[in-house]
Image 1: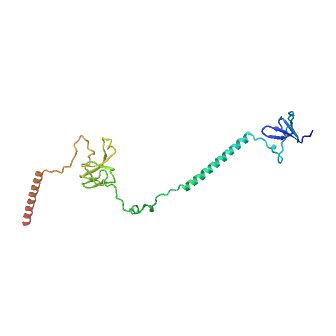
Image 2: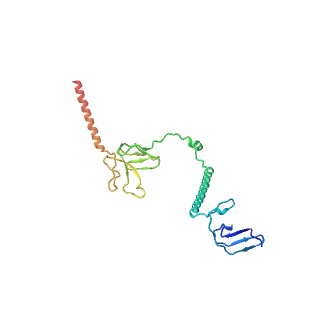
Image 3: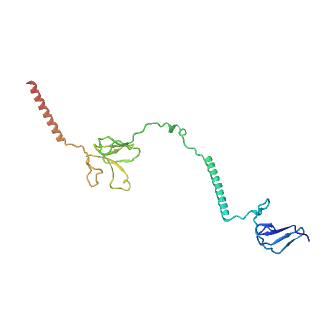
Length: 240
């Protein structure tokens, strides 16, 4: 019978180990050049400090729980760094490819660039409480932001102007109609102590500009008589 050239021990999950270096109770397999045969399990031997030699991978100890946790955390961090680097590359590439051309002054053309006229001086020309006469402009506007109230007219360019002599007032309709409750009106009060708007139950105040012709004629005649009397008295003084 041939003598075995080496002794090999079967270790679970680690393949074959040289005889005498394992620390577990394992089944021993003797290898010869002509046959394989299994022997009885051998008793475990005293553990010895493993030495790391060239080609001997048995000197590595299995990783502990803390070491495995740290390695897992390191792997996760490496994967996160890779994903972030990919995202940054994608963002840079999208910023370079998705460029937007904004409008410029030169692209406007001659119809837009030659508008250098002065402003139209819009806004309020008369404030609340200020006296006006017929024809005075109260407010200039583009569109109807303020609406004409009592004794105020509106031109074709939405300009508000006074129709009567009085005092300017800005007010809102106290009725709060659904359609007009947000409107601001501009009116002209005939008297300084008058409050606009005039209640619907009261008569509207109007400046009729009507006079008594008979009384006016008598006043003219009286003034003429007085003027003639003054002239006669002046002539007497001169002749004396």
